[in-house]
Image (cartoon, rainbow, N blue to C red; front, side):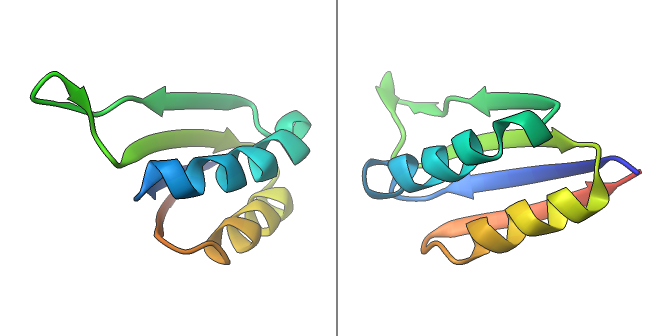
Length: 80
């Protein structure tokens, strides 16, 4: 089963490093990672979007569990 995990990171300045650490620790489990930079009025938004493709369902659950412990992170999932 493939899981697509969508992350909305609010307050990027404070939370981006924490998210990056989790994604780096689990880098070999993530097949695809796409970062979508949000620009408003020619300035970077304080929030950002990341899409992850994770093929192993159990690993996806572990990564989502780790990310869900962070503040100001919204998580959505699609499973195929």
